[in-house]
Image (cartoon, rainbow, N blue to C red; front, side, top):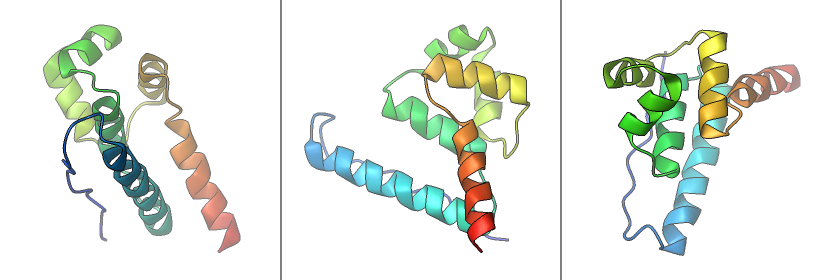
Length: 110
């Protein structure tokens, strides 16, 4: 089974409009690929959102009330406890549950 691992894009300064466009294209491609394979890498999605918001792992650990090492384990996870995903969604103000909902919608179409 293939798992999509997104390449790191560094196109210049964080104020560069083209970087934001490329990241949004990359995110859309990642969502489409994961949905097509019914294989959601939630840890990768969390890590990418943390980077998109330019937040540190130390900040993230404090928000979750855990260690940085636990955060790195989250980034490597392909599955996660729903309560922890809710805490992460609130900390980053991002609905990670939508990845699973979108994946189910794609299954209904096929």
